[in-house]
Length: 227
Image 1: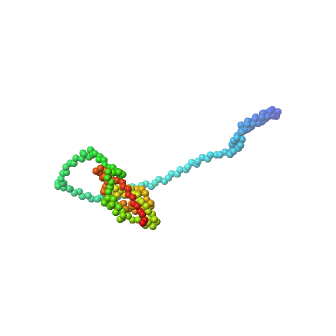
Image 2: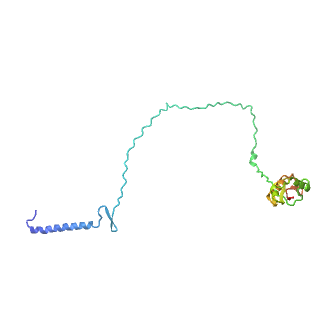
């Protein structure tokens, strides 16, 4: 019920108005400095807010149940297989002889036998007795004079001179073809001819060191001259 005196209502209205203004000022003070919706303050600038979207919840759907496995009537299943037939025959062992027991205990005590390697014999330079060509030196000279051929290339080009060849006669009197050594030659065509001549020589009488036959080095000079 309002008072009939208007002079008494004015102070009350003013007091309510002042409380309303004070309340509004307090609310403004509390909201001061907060960002607006969708914005945030970072070092004096306004930037949009990056929202993190949540993954949607997957919708699961119940899968249909597999059809039931049909039951198999194993009594009606027919399987075919081929079974080989084996015939067992009785063997008469009455005619076989009883073999004696063999003692193999010696195998446990086997002794390893080392293989003997023959030593490599190097041809000698100065034996007690030198190898000898069949017929001696006259026989050697006759053999060379009969079988030596002057190479056409060397003859037409005037190549001449003496070829010095070193070779070995082994303990059997044979020419060792791996022992040839050229000590001097005017041309390789003359060298090849002398080597061919020596390879075709007959067996020599081997050299000796004491009573033992040994391989010996020999030196042979063969002279080529155009007449």
